[in-house]
Length: 150
Image (tube, rainbow, N blue to C red):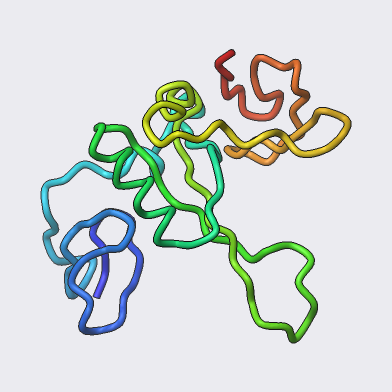
């Protein structure tokens, strides 16, 4: 089973894509629903999604994402392993809500969180679109040109 939008593969028995909420198809050659691709899939650098805030559980992240989608704004959940885990230890995951940087102010009121603070004492962080090092005083990413809102 495949998602016709993001093209993720699922085991038999699944009927909906967990990311796109699209009906799964038997093969990617089969005609899919006439739904536009998610913004994050073909986003220009100006529309790329950036980490807004983190959650302790996937359910909390899904609830926040559902509020964002109900407001007709694009969002997705990034799941990654917690850094620094010991080899052989059980995998621990972090759940991050990603939205367009221009929607950060709206998000604060919508879900009640402030944007994730840039990491590091030197006031630099990695661009969520391309990974380049960005200084807190930069208005745009030096790597991809993603514009940041004040």
